[in-house]
Amino acid sequence: MALSGDLNNYLNVIKTAKKENVDFKISNTRQALLKQGKKCAKCKKDLNPYYCKYITDPKTKEVSVICSNCDVSIPQR
Image (tube, rainbow, N blue to C red; front, side, top):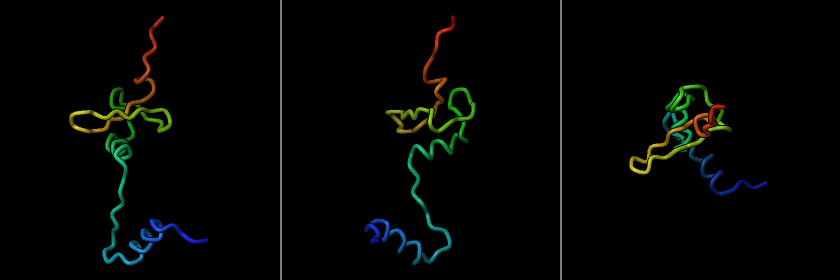
């Protein structure tokens, strides 16, 4: 089974790296989640990655993550 070109290039870079640490690219949403400490931006509760919303500020392009409870407001009875 042959490896795809991108995966093969990636493995070659890791094998031939001359320095000890290889920098990995992390997506903007993952960076925002780690920067917030896996907590909601509004209520500071723990986030479940499957039930959260990523909001990008149109001016600064900064991503923030909020939980599903803060995203969907349910009126009180």
